[in-house]
Length: 111
Length: 113
Image 1 (cartoon, rainbow over the protein chains, first blue to last red):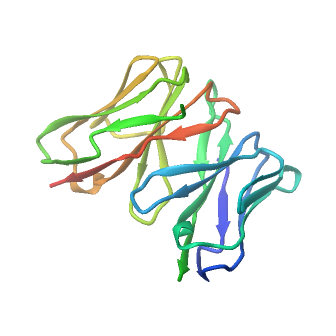
Image 2: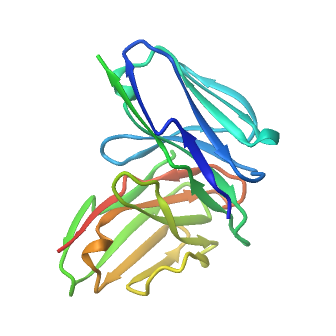
C-alpha cells in the first residue's frame, strides 16, 4: 500500500511566525486532503487539493502530484493553530478508495 | 451543511458489555467510513461502506461489527472488547468514495475497563 510521510514530526513556533509542513507519498494519488486535528479530536478540513495551489486566509497549500508531495503553509501563526496536522491520500481499494493518513505534524504555537 | 454527527461523544464499557457507536450524515454521501485512532498516532481505517454495502474491511477483529442500515446511518457494534481497544473512533463520509472530499465527525472516545 501507499506510504505517507510528514515532516517535521514536531514543530514549535512563536506566535506570528510562518511555517511549512510537508507531506510525501510513495505512489501516484488522485486525492489529497489536509486536516487539522484540534485538542478534542475533531478533524477539521483545511484543503482538498489533488493538485495545484489553494489559499484560505493565512493558510495555503500546494500539491505537486508528479513529484509526490504536498506542502501546507501557515503564515502569521496564532495559538489557535496548535494541534496535529495530517495529510491524507486516497489509495486504490476497489469499489471504494481508502483514505490513508500521513504520520502527522504536531504544531505548538507559543504566545 | 458538511456535518457528520457521532454519538456518544464518550463511552466507558466493560469487557463483557455490548454497546454501539452511531454516525449520521445528511449530505447525500454514499461512502461512509470507520477509523480508529490511538493516542499520538494517525487514524487507521477499519471499514468502508459504499452504497450501503461493505466494500473494505481492514482485517478488523470480529468483536467490531459494522452496520449500515441506510444511506445516512452507520453503526459500529462492539462486543467483548479488550482494554487495548480503547481509542478515539472516528466516522467519516464522502460523496462517492472515489476522488471526493471526506468529512469527519467529532469522534467517540471509548474506554474499555
